[in-house]
Length: 157
Image (cartoon, helix red, strand yellow):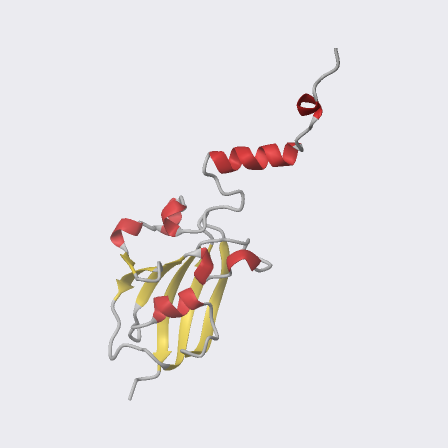
């Protein structure tokens, strides 16, 4: 007896695996939102202890600063960037003009309101970081973790 047409139709293995992943809720590209991430313990990230901004960026001040809050102008920060698994991606000093779209949106949102000398942890969802394009050192759809210290900041007029 010959198999029916339906029995002879083959589904590519890749589609079957993708469907299985989708059915169990796993994103094959990794979690895009901080709430879906298991952070490396060394990062000291506890989202329940952080403030979630309307944008979905999480911030936590670990050292208070002095002076007025920065909301515009030229700023300089010292930073370290990690992936949620604890991999350090970058660190150094960065100068940028606040409000001029010179950094990823989540970074600017996380720095907003800092005072000179303040240190913050900032957790940024993928869509406010590098999104689907990633970088040479940041995979696509990655949540980012920063520790940032405001070194200098323009004082709003």
